[in-house]
Image (tube, rainbow, N blue to C red; front, side, top):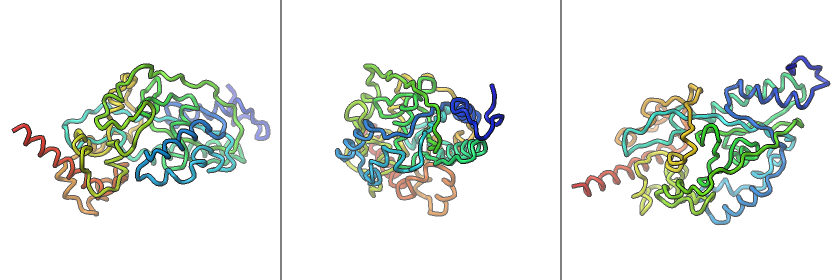
Length: 329
């Protein structure tokens, strides 16, 4: 096949450019890629506004800021004409060794924001080298875009009843990123069908009933939200009794998903678990100082919870462990 760099700069074939962009994305290490037009997500935007109206975002007040921008990439990057959506497998086969201090799989390795951003920046540089007037905007989770909705729109998978993206080849252990481009490209028209069917394992397994109905999660009931996003000084009440050993995040709804039996180990070395990242020793967390905290979690996604949040989580789990020991006696 003729490569783009063999074409005259003034005569770029959109189909060929689009396919070469997808091939380059795979060469950068991404596992899946799709290209769709940068148009407003009408249905998804409506569902977002409904979710916000229910107050299910809790303390995540940034979600309230301009939901129209979240649903329309042209409000975030006015020149956007195309959205290149990528997925990167982060699954590693290690298992938790204890019932306390468990860490969500996504945070075992280096911070995914850095890894996905670096790969997308390399892809954008490649595009700029082949199309002189190309401009783009990189989005990895923290930008006001609906990542999972775009991934589904691009045919990378479908949104499961637990609200995570499920890919038919890799399950749900994937990170998502987008590259907004000012170029008109040839678009992928095939979307993945929803394959959850009648399965409700994720809903049944959630110990806090956070999945209020299929495809709707109340963040304030979610263990991940409680241990990462919440800035409350303490974890108390019924939720504190149902953490099930989770120190940072929670993977229960993904662990029970039948589609994750297709998981394969990631080829990205940056996602290899760091020492002490699969499980943490609660007493060590409680002894951390601002300096030792900064050193231990440098380059880790776990720093999002901040030192105060981590020590709050450790105290809550320590109390839960003591209560369990007393019951056993």
